[in-house]
Image 1 (cartoon, rainbow, N blue to C red):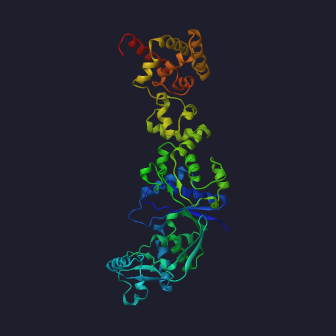
Image 2 (image 1 turned 90 degrees about the vertical axis):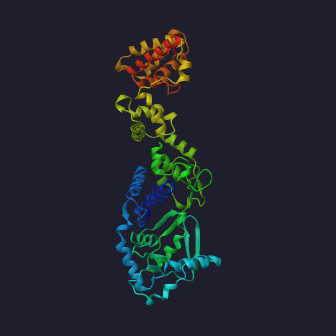
Image 3 (image 1 turned 180 degrees about the vertical axis):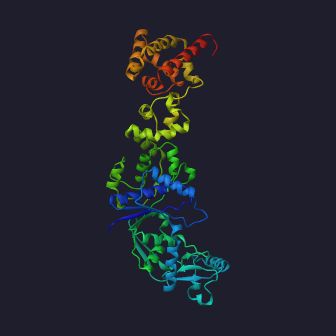
Amino acid sequence: MKIKTRFAPSPTGYLHVGGARTALYSWLFARHAKGTFVLRIEDTDLERSTPEAIQAIMDGMNWLSLSWDEGPYYQTKRFDRYNQVIDEMLAKGTAYRCYCSKDRLEKLREDQIARGEKARYDGHCRCDAEQHSADEPHVVRFANPTTGSVVFNDLIRGPIEIANKELDDLIIRRTDGSPTYNFCVVIDDWDMEITHVIRGEDHINNTPRQINILKALGAPLPAYAHVSMILGDDGQKLSKRHGAVSVMQYRDDGYLPEALLNYLVRLGWSHGDQEIFSIEEMENFFTLDAVSRSASAFNTEKLLWLNHHYINSLDADYVAQHLMWHMQQQGYDLTKGPSLITIVKLFGERSKTLKEMAESCSYCYQDFSEFDHDAAKKHLRPVAKAPLELIKAKINAIADFDWQVENIHHAIEATATELNIGMGKIGMPLRVAVTGIGQSPSVDATVFAVGKQRTLDRIDRALAYISQRENGQE
C-alpha cells in the first residue's frame, strides 16, 4: 500500500506549534514510508477564513521546510463535488432534508438538557420530508446508523468504540447550500486516497461520524492516529498567554527551524534517549507506535538549549542566512561591518537566539553614543591611559593586509609585556573602549570584527573620556 498522509489546517489564524507538530508527524510518517504528503486548506468557514491566514500557514510550512507533494488543495474550490455526492446520498436515502426551525431545535435542546439527556437531534425529519417541498429552506443531514457501534483502532491510542446512539444526524449541507466541514473532510480523504489521518486529539469525536459517512459511501477507511495536546509550562492548554505560539513568531524571536523541528518531534515522540535529531534521522526513525498518548508540556528553556546547539553546530554560512533577517530588523548597514559568518562564529557561543545575536553585535556596525556608565567607571580610569595609548600605536602599525585576529592578539600581548601588566589591565579597557560595554567575545576577535579605523577612533574617544575624568569633568 502506498502511504499517503495530509495536513489540513483551517485558515482562520496563523500556523501554531500544535498544528506544526501535527504537520511534522504527518510529513515524517509519509517520508519514512517513501509515501506522499498532501497539503489541504480547509476553508469552508467562509466568514473566518482569510487570505492572510492562508499565507501565514504557507510561510510557516516553508520556513520549516515541510514541503508537500500534492496541493495545496482548497475545499472552497470543490463545492460542486461535495454537492454532487450529497445529491447522490439524498437519492439513496443515506441523507435527508431537515426542515426543523431554529425555534424547534432550541426547544428540543432545552427539554433534553432539563431531562438530563445529551443534547442531540431527534431525527424528526427522517420520515417527514413528504410534507415539505424541496424549495423550502432546509439543511441536509446524514442518516447516521441508529444501532451498533463505530469501532476503530487508533494507531496511537488503541481501540476506540463509540455507540451510534451517541451520534446524532450530522448536518452535511447548510441552508445556504454550502457543505459542512465534517462532510468535506470525508470526501477529500476519499478522493485524495488518504491512507493515514494524523491529527490532534480534539478531532476524536469527529472520527466516528466521518467513518459512518465513509461506510455509507462504500469508501475505504483510512487509518486514524490522534496526537495528544500540548500544554504550557503551567499544565494548562497551550495558548497565547504562554508566549509565542505562532510558528513565525519563533522565527521572529530568533529560533532556527531545525531547533523548532527537533523540539516539536520530541514533544510526544522518542527514540531511545536521543535528544538531538537531524531531519534525516527523524525520517529514518519516526514511527507512530513511539508517539505518547499523554499530553506534552512545552518547555521554553529546552527549546532555547536546542537553539543554542544548532546555532553552534550548523554550518556558519547557513546560520548567517537566517541571521540576515534579524540584522535587517535592527536596521544595520551590513556594508559597514564584518561578514555575517564572522558574527555567527564570534557571537554563537554567547547567543541563545539569532535575535539576541543581532542585538549584541550592534557595536560592530554602529557607533554608540556613550560608554556604559559602570563599565567606564571601572575600566576607563587614568591608569588605563598608557595601555590604551600603546595598544593604539601597535594596532595602527598593523598593515591592512595583516589585519587578522592573531596579529591583534600579539599586539595586546606585547603591550602587556612592555608595560609589565596583566592582560586584563589592557584587555578590559580596550574592550570598553571598542564596544562601549563591559562584556563581549574575546577582545582580539572583537577588535578584528569592529575594524581597524573604527577601533582607533574609539580608543581616541576613550582616551578623551579618561582625560575628562582626570580633569574632574566626568
